[in-house]
Length: 378
Image (cartoon, rainbow, N blue to C red; front, side, top):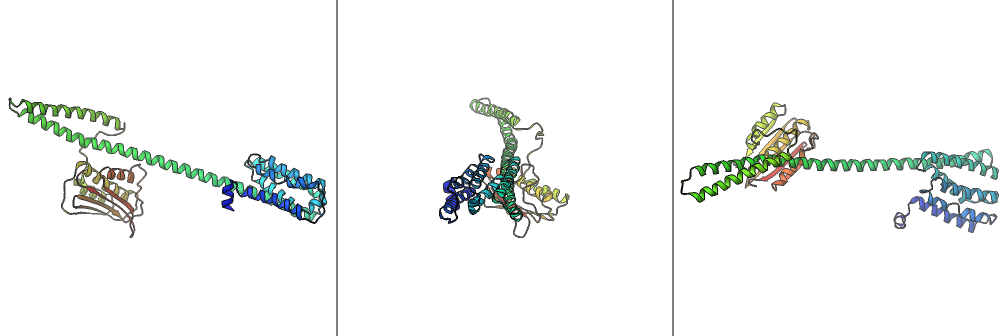
């Protein structure tokens, strides 16, 4: 049934209405009860208006009740012996209750009860019969109203979920852009320092040349001028990247040489932390060195502030042209940080920049682990 309704572009309500229409036709054809032929067109036309319930939430079920009243007016006794007319009227009450606007639902419910009064009068029903029939009509209206309320709630929940997902995506994109800008500023400091050293050394060597070494002097002068021009452009670039609230970098960028100090600061802050350095210490490229330090810093910050951890461990392992960094704790955090916008987003950007590998997730024995493997050279 579900596949059929999807293939035909119908929903369950449309299928019910189609079933009522067909059922009315079959009942009129096979019933042995005497009824006036004049009620046949009214009975057959009672259910089809409900197909228009979405566009005409008041007029469509009202037309259904109008056809039912017409059938009752033409032949009360014959109509009283037909079951599907009653089912169609019940469907109209459900439709009234499910109207998108509450005023239409209430107006439709009142209209249906008014029609019921007329039908009871024409049928000559006793008070007991009137009560249970009225109960059916009211119950049908309540069912429709409840379905509408739940449908609206489900639709609102879907919209909230979609908005939340969109907001998460926008926040993630903003965090990535912000972190890439932060990385660019830090790399500027590293590259700027290197270019400055090259320029100063070229100037120093040029001053030591003999007077007859003109070609060498010109080459070194070109290096100086190119270096100074590059520094000027880099300062201009970092001025675009740097936010108004950023403090100028007055100290060298941190590196793994300061990881012991970082662990000590974490201990002083109240989190017992163990540091292990394995393998033969190898000099790292400056950008990779900074990335390694930032990873340890981020892992310890999360363990200290957001994981409720009682113990943490930092492992720095040098092995076969790579450096592996592990920060693990026994807390309850998920590594998301405190909402600063960086967290794992920034670490992933940094590690990916140098072609490294990153794992971040819960440990089987409890706690969280942040692990990355970086090449020694860029």
